[in-house]
Amino acid sequence: MVAAIFWDPDPEVFSFPFFHFPILWYGVFFALGFWFAFLVFVQVFSRYSHLSSHEPLSAAKIKEIADRLTVYIVVGTILGARLGHFIFYEHPSDYLADPIEFFKLRNGGLASHGAIVGIIIAGLLFRARIRKEYPDLTWIRLLDFLAVPTALAGAFIRIGNFFNQEILGTPTNLPWAVVFGHPADGSFPEPRHPAQLYEAIWYLALFFLLWRLSKKASFLLKQGKLVGLFLILAFLFRFFVEFIKTEQSRLLETSWLTMGQILSIPAILLGCYFYLKRS
Image (tube, rainbow, N blue to C red; front, side, top):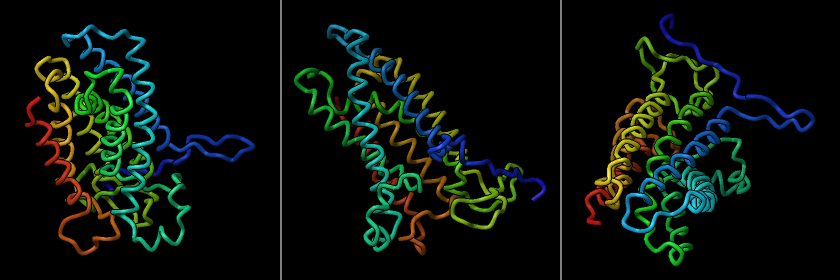
């Protein structure tokens, strides 16, 4: 206990007067993640536009596409993450008894695997919407452009989880163990792996790798390379880090694999498919 780091921040950044509506740190990091992801997407898309054999799109046109896509991605991320949480991490009886709970985002409950599915579906719907305007912008190419900023957004979201004192690691005696003063799950404060920070650091490193590779024509022009590498590396790490995380799902309390590990396997296989698929 003496060697551990004590962590117990106020989850609220500030509260609007009169309305009593608090702004939470998690929400701030979530919004920052999307904002920086938007900027990164524009840069990656612009890079591709100038490398491809077609006439480059103007900066204004690229921003217009990014603006339109953002609506799809935000909705897809939230709906996918929320549905993923209720389907894979909660007992059906709980949310069927109170369906309104689905809309109470402030109570927490967003699953990253569901978010990825939501992003993939949102990209597919957006591609169908603009296919006549931009026939060269295929679904898989769009996912390539999204993979780089998604890694960065993932790092921000995990930092938000750290502030929320949720997605806890297992107990440990390591010198960088963290004692969460008020764990979101109500568990006893004890030295734990800061699993949220492990993931945040990995996703940040993955972002820099993908950002660097996106500058290489051999990666950017070949469809599926960036999104495939993202899915493989992100969820391989997720699979192994789950060994030092507490089980989040109420459906697999006795399983030898966590729900996060089970859901990571198809994501890794999908990544292999995208990466090995011929353009």
